[in-house]
Image (cartoon, rainbow over all chains, first blue to last red; front, side):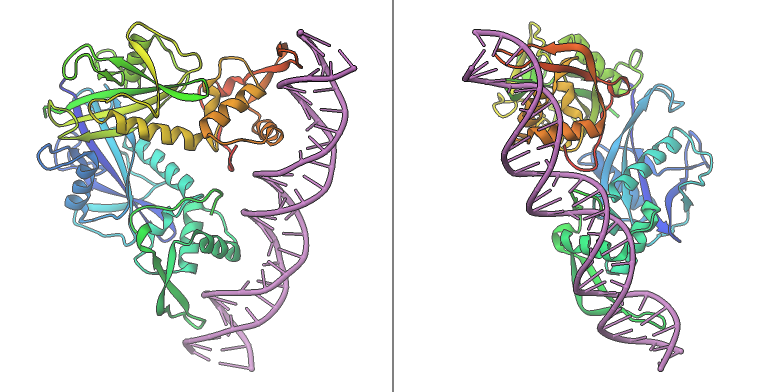
Length: 216
Length: 216
DNA sequence: TCAATAGTGTCTATAAGACACTATGCC
DNA sequence: GGCATAGTGTCTTATAGACACTATTGA
């Protein structure tokens, strides 16, 4: 069993209404110096489970503590890593502000550089999963900051789903979901227009997501 | 990296309208002789990926080639296996006829014996996933044989979801899904009643599943 | 012919989508 | 005051659920 066991993290954010993924310059072989997903070995003495390893990688490499971190699946085989048979557990996370470190860079998900291993394939799969989940869950709220207005969240959904959503119906379904609460008295000023009420996630939903029977 | 990497398979079937899971008597340590999920190490020279290892385990231990085999997720940590830090990739499969081998036995999913590792936890998760998927996909057809009648499939859905489904509406939604085709001229004789038309999955759906926006 | 289950037609209730309207703050 | 965007009320349309009916076989 010389199997290589790693975790990889697909960190996503929204920049100018486009999904972007965080890539890092690899600092060791193989593919040293090449842009790739942040990842690494599981550390048996510090990681309580594979998900903890992914969280550690995100913290170390991007300084990010993501409230939403979910397993996507595994990728494995004899050919995906030049070192031999390998298996990686892929996690994905959504963050609001694109935190920029020295070696991290954000790339639009449909304009990626050449990627090592099967990372292009992995990103394709995760993006499809996120888009699909957005249609029937509250996933996209994690792309907003702690506080946000309904029109802002509306724009985020439209960006992720890349289709227009009726404003009034969007509000109605948000209301039905009952996952947001008003921030009392707080509004986001409008430029030359009416300010919008600020909302935040209700506590029970801060680290999980809410699912609707039909789409949002 | 002395990490233990395994796959485990949750093989499910329906016996007398109850979900049952296939358990095997372990033939090696740890927990030798104890009922457990079929599983094992990945064989780097024969398994093209972790899913292939799961398929191999199912074939070797249960003689089953399941048309539907999907990854559920990973379970990992320092404590789940007495040998040390371990990670298992869990797959699940649904089969029609409860094939019985010498060392395999079917247990109702809510009346399991004491299980080693975190197998009880794994089964709970998979069963929840299967029940949830049944509500909006064609998953349960894999619990039927190659050919089946609509009333039979109807009963399977009711068993998995454990709630009554309106016959007429069930038929309408099946029709909308358009995943079945009539077996020309073939019917299942009724005892003292009208025989039912036999159907089978259309080819494109024989190894995948179809998803509805709303539930079935 | 009748018991029993297969299969269909149609009405009703609910939820989604469309759209027009009102409200409010900033220039 | 008027422009721009926030926020609401309501009509229409699609889909899900309920239910009653007809159809077909075997005893």
